[in-house]
Structure formats: C-alpha cells, structure tokens
Image (tube, rainbow, N blue to C red; front, side, top):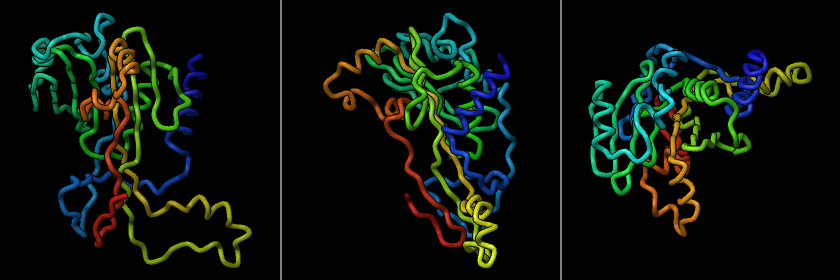
Length: 262
C-alpha cells in the first residue's frame, strides 16, 4: 500500500509540476519586485526543505482544530492568543486580517488569517519570495491529506472535507536566464541521432523559481460564497490568493540586462 501511495504521489507531482528536465543549479535569492537586478548577482546556497519539519508547521496537530490551533469562527483575539502561545507576534493586525512572518525550514512564508464579522473564515500559507523547491510544500499536502478530491484542475489541487476546503498550488513565477557563449542547434550533421537528446536540453540555461500557496477555507463560508451573486467583491486580496483566484505576476531575469515582466 505504501509503495502504491508513493508511486501515486510521484505520478501526480510529475503531471502537476511538469516532467521536462531543466538545468537545476544551486538556489538563488530572488530580489523583490521593486529592487534592481544587479548584473553580478551571486547565487547563495540554501538548505533544502525537510518534509518532516514542514509537516510539523503545516499540521493542525489535534483533530479538534481546523487550522493550526484555531477553529473557524474564532475572533482575531483568540487567534492572536493561540499564536502568542507559539511565540508568534502579528506583522499586520486589523479587524479582518492577521499576518505573521514565519519560516518553514528556512523558507520565508506569510501565515495568513482572514475574518469577516469578527469570525475566522480562511487561513493558510503564502511564500514571501520565489524559491526553488516550493514543490516540497505540495508533496507534504499530498502526504497529509492523501489524493485530492479534485485532481483534474489544470492549476492546483483541492481537498474537500466536512469542515474545511484545502487548496494548494505551486507555480513558476520567476525564470532566470543564464548567459552562455554557445547555444545548441538542431544537431547539424548528427541531427537524426541527437534529436531526442537535444529536445530534452531545450530548457537548459534556465533556472526556475516557484511561489507556493496552501489555503484553508471554512466549508460553510465556501458553500455560502458559491451562492453569492458577485463572489469576487466578497473576497479580500489575501482570500483571493489563498483560494487560487489570483497569483503573483511572473518575470524573467536576464543577468546583465534586467528583468522582463511576463
């Protein structure tokens, strides 16, 4: 059974993330949107995600909770008290929003709680900056919740439970080109022999970075939202992001030249 589960997860990740080989180099820190891209930007090695530690950060821990140590309907003060017990203080706090900055095995994430009428209705995690291995987050959700109930979606996956709807997505948001003196042709005199090999090298010279999101939504709120005449106007920006309605704009970085918004 375990072998079957592992094979199923591998198959879903292959279809979801794409199987085209890439020239994977050591991880980079990606500068924020508003900062310039220096031509001599130097990569910095990062520690890979530890799935076990990610599980500890993502998991609710006790069946009596819906997300971390909170339940749907909690007011902001109860959520802040719960996070304070974990040593976390909000980076942003309003009547309708709590935002924390946490690290999941050295990966910076925003921990989000959103409220309406003083009641918690959505929560989740959003990567602060693009990273190389956001797919680890997706793998952990698969391990935690099993096969998604809606795997047929083109982008993202959904799990539907009695109390919560879980959404997760990992998408390429930054592509960094690496400049080289030579590029491959169609194979020249050996084109008939090298066709397959060269087609697999089509993406060589690109480093791809991902942003990830894991959203939890109150099932009762989700049901009511589907009846709403204008659901977009009901949602805040963070709620749209946690539910996969919007995502960060993509860009391509070309060292020595600058960046292009996709």
